[in-house]
Length: 129
Image 1 (spheres, helix red, strand yellow):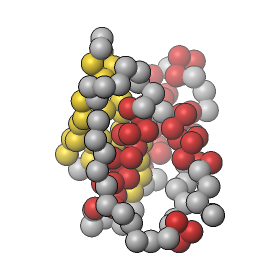
Image 2: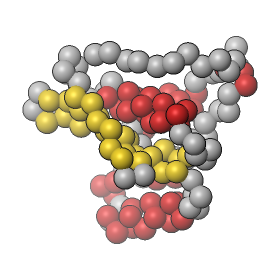
Image 3: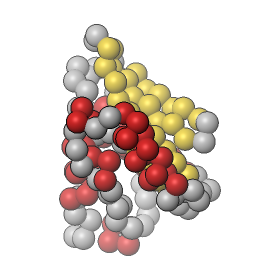
């Protein structure tokens, strides 16, 4: 696996801390009817109509592991040949989504991820050193 990125010249303490919204993770999906979960999702989307919406996901089928980032009708996907568990795929998908935000002309983004552990890691990451 090879990750490529440009070094950002902005000092970390000047970067805007991401806001993580857990409102769709407040209950187990199995406990909520799909139509209610869909309604809550679309209700949340309606609050961000002037944002570029990015979706991320990691998936494993058999021994094949992949991730995808979808935005503005564009899909970027990566097949992860050397990994055997789903856990690294989710944060890698978020990394790619953040890279999309850095390269885009858009200024406002919302990233949807179903990886609660990755979102929690981002929320507690300390950039104030």
